[in-house]
Length: 107
Image (spheres, rainbow, N blue to C red):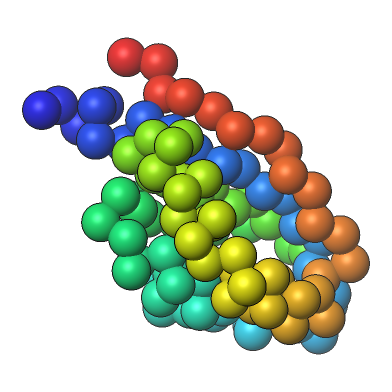
């Protein structure tokens, strides 16, 4: 199995983070944060990658990677209550959250 076939689905989010919340946001949405801990319960989760804009220090892109769209949707559906609770709790960290879209890796 090639790398491409192992990680072929990504959900991309864009955030505008509050000035006084960048450290906490970077932790919670980074590799040791709450989202990673939740998603890591699935063998189909391949990691999240948090990127900070060079042009605007409050703007971030988050790329969540999964084996497939179905694996992602199944995990979210099975964990909807916890997912919603975490999401609601972290709304205080940012001004805006936008789902950029869902993407399949071109191989």
